[in-house]
Amino acid sequence: MGALKYLIIHCTATPQGREVSSGELRKWHTDPVSKGGRGWSQVGYTDMFHLDGRVERLVRNNEDMTVDAFEATNGASGYNDKSRHIVYVGGLDKDAKTTKDTRTPAQLESLERYVKDFHSRFHLVRIIGHNEISSKACPSFDVQQWLKEIGINQ
Ligand SMILES: [Zn+2]
Image (tube, rainbow, N blue to C red):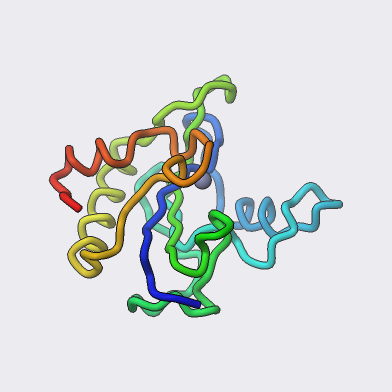
């Protein structure tokens, strides 16, 4: 495993207003493909931002600059040994067809608090959206624009 280089923001790609439990998310990622999961050995993200702003830690992390094997999550292949992945619940319109920034006021607040704290501790780690390293819509908002709005210059 390597040095921490990226904090990558994701969405669960679920409809606006629909809560997702960590158990549900874990099943989607770690259930065998034959059972409709992705068959991963670990869930995709370290921390999960619920609709009410609560931050749930999914995978143990010792908060240092090294991505240890026990900390690695599966958010984006090729990046997992140098990244921490975080996810907010949402990212799709109510019809579940259109990508949309569905962050609730509580999620916006806790995500801002988290990212600011993270940036103050790891100012050399670049904060990006999944869509900056992959041709995906995830996390359904422009992370660089949002970082500027909340006063983070990286
Ligand atoms: Zn993603």
